[in-house]
Length: 296
Ligand code: NAP
Image (cartoon, rainbow, N blue to C red; front, side, top):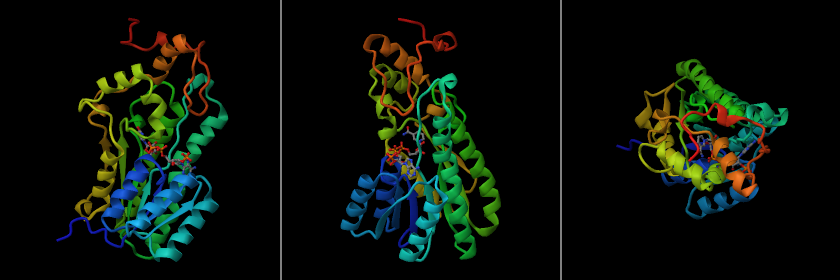
């Protein structure tokens, strides 16, 4: 009995060129799924397409901005013309800036909410219509974050988008259940991907983050990919509307302020992280309201 039952199933993975999405593409391909990588990253997407095809997987990369409905429609049309079905959708595309809330500008807010929330909505909306029309008992996995509930100073727009993704997934799980379509949410903790590069390269912050992960290591993209595999497999046939933290226990502890550590290091280095929308926040008196971080 094949409990995973992924052979020849067609999966769209947004953000599939990097990090968690890439790990998911590789794992699902290894189980016989056809893979559609949808990402802005042309180079990473094409490379992965080639890698998967070389190992015998039916895979295509289609450059897609998930926040653009025309491009999402085009992605769905290309997937149907290539594979004639869409069985599974995994929404991994995501971005985050790093700004104190009072420094947050409209462009950062729009970029974050458009990519993370509107992108997830557009994909769910377009793909679920196809699944319903064709009576496909589909599977949808949305990637939220433990920051949907746990606040971290410096990522308000991101945390807002993730809280909304979790809410969207719950409503969608309810509405799509009568069609046999399962919708589930994964809430990763700190995972070592390009999105977290700047955070994890700051030694004091990486050390602090480790203290907040009871299992004692930073997560790997494969840790999340394995739970995606479970949720889209026959093993999770009766699971819908679930929200699963994949965080090594980090969601039980809470998370430190990223800004605090950059601010502290900047006093010595005068260096800003290479994270979109980051600006100096020297006038931002974060130390006043962060508890438990006494100066050494
Ligand atoms: P990642 O390595 O940066 O991968 C994200 C991918 O999404 C990148 O290839 C990126 O392309 C792509 N992307 C960005 N904007 C897009 C758009 N508008 N349309 C299509 N693709 C777009 O990040 P990751 O860590 O694997 O993140 C995957 C998901 O997990 C995200 O939703 C993230 O919020 C979530 N998550 C991550 C962590 C973590 O610790 N890493 C924790 C909790 C949740 P470009 O590189 O070209 O921008």
